[in-house]
Image (tube, rainbow over all chains, first blue to last red; front, side, top):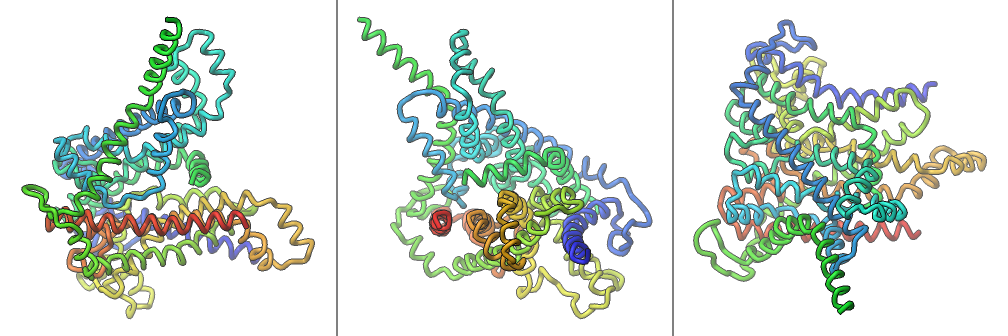
Length: 271
Length: 304
């Protein structure tokens, strides 16, 4: 009994230390510039609901938020389509150079490339893709590609041949087999890929800084830093902005928990 | 004739199949292979981003060898990584160990511990920057941490945690661990749950103490998983960047620089693209070596 109390005490302490900073962020988002520095009560004496509206309009967060949604949705859709097509071919179809190309993707996952963003930026300026949504989306698709191809391929490899043969006899084209048989079969892989890439794109900062200098194109993470730089003392509005950036990703996580745990253990097997 | 038609059909079929991988391969070649090549190529040039490029051989690398700020930055990242490897991973292991049994609220703990890892570095950095705020107003501490320290009877501990060069890096390392331990926790817990319960039963019957069981059953069984966590921790922490950017003011740069901030500032502040690429090449090589060594250790552990 005493032992289990101690265990709970330990676990609870860590749990509180995880949650309290977030609670503090939300709490401060409901204060004013005058009260935020002096009122340290757990629940502030005067609640102010205006900060979210200010952040949304004056702080440009409506634009940042919309951009983040656009980038996340298009990158994730792009990754799922492009990597599943490629993985389907690597798993089920024949063409010259198949193995070399596949191992190229595997190797890319093993080799960390910190700082290749310098050369990437040079390339993007040459292609006139700096300060375009399209350029940023393409770069981010590339980031998630290798991992997704690998995960899709492990699923497609497990798909029974009879299924495919039957479909072929029924006159199903290759594209038809990919879309009607392989994709439904790989649904668990799709879930994992969607979740991890959504987290990754929503939270990405470095490439967004390099490639998107125009306020109209910035995603939330970039917008937060810009806002903080310009209004370094307006903490309540900053906290409201942080809350808006954190809530969607926490919601996605809470709904998708099961897949995240599964994805991490499968990712570990791949590595 | 028939033969010819057959060959044409096969070629056509292969070409058709290749179309499936074409989008992935072209994106990969343009956005991964080419920058990879360009990074190595540019590292031999003196180039300011625009204008003429001067081939200077290995001068960038020679200069880099004597660049103390650069090697300091690697040391800083190494320090953050070391804290993560010891403090963060020990915490993750202890928590996973505590959750690997019939215990109430297990799902709640598991849910909560993974919340910091899903947050972005910008959000984490700015929240902690606010909590660690060193300023005072009307005789009150603005930052939550100093306020708590002052009011709970430790006024001597009140400190400018991020502003003092002596404590800045450690503070960042601890926030980094706060953000990261959930990853290790989930992976280690998954690993612990794959251990056959009968092994524990057998150890119990043999009269092994809890500690003996831990060192002789759990640790050896977990070695491969532990090494995966180690490798992920090293690669992740060495490349820390955004957390530092959002937590530290520019005055402290030399005390909290990490390789990625050096690369960034060589490119953006001084426009030395060639030098930035040389830094990137050296840093990438170091990371590849470290992960290769750890991988070799993993394989050895798996054989044993």
